[in-house]
Image (tube, rainbow, N blue to C red; front, top):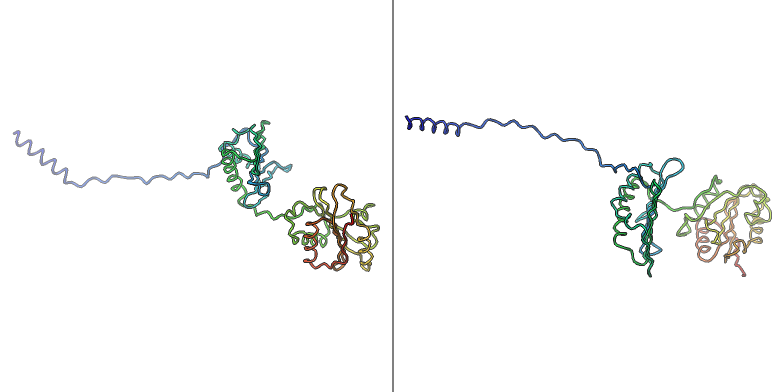
Amino acid sequence: MKRLLALVLAMALCLAACAPAAPVETTAPTTVPTEAPTAPVSDNPVTFFSLTLGENYENIGALTAFSNDDGTAYVEYVGDVKKIGNLDMSIFQDITAALNASGLAALSGQDSYLEGEANGSMYIELADGTMLTCGFSGEIPQEYQDGYAVMADCFARLTADIAEYVPQPTVLGEVEETLLAELMAIITGSGIQNPDGFTISQVARDEYFAYTLGLSADTGIADAAQCAPMMMTTAYSLSIVKLEEGADAEAVCADFAANVDWQKWVCVMPTNALVAVKDNMVLCLVAADELYAMTASGIESTGWTVVETLENAN
């Protein structure tokens, strides 16, 4: 009986081993859609951001952000390219998250100014009034350089859809179309390195109209516009007047040449002046040294005919 029972068990085991395995039901893994990661919301976000890093004073990278009066955020990225734009205020949450990851806050209060042209500065304001500041020259701490890289990457992403900034003079108010086009063409064609350091504006037709232009009278002049530097420490003036029909262009040219005010800028002095004509317009440039030479080149390259050149005898 024992041998028979053992035989039966053995046969049962054999049959179980040879039988095909029952199929195992499987369920395909469920893919849970995920949203793109967003910056965590901070209850104490950045409200003003300014960070710079330069290998010298001619080549400085800069990251800037602050709120505009219209509820948007002004953003400026200066790296391999320059981008300027107005974005949604939510970018301050992204900037805050990047700042927290950068380690820059730990450098606040540190200042070190040594020999050399390498430079870096930080000024940041938070919603609660906290200010984070530091400044370096000569030698820049590696922690600052690493932190700047984190923030530069953040600003590059924020400005990815903004077109590259093309520097040009700032136009103040409404300017007569032809005069604006001529001034823009001269400045952009002159090769001046920082054309965005200049403004273009219509000359107001008031009691100071002729004086502002450097003329003794406004006879025969229909419109006028000027290009001037933002800083009055630069001796520079470029004026164009549009003449009324039948006006005496030669008389206006002579008036410009006879009334150049070499002392206008008090602390700085121009070296040269020129008067030129084109169609029904007369131009007068008063400037110094390289700025004069570059603008004069721009004037001639845009189709103007130089009538007279002058040198400052002083």
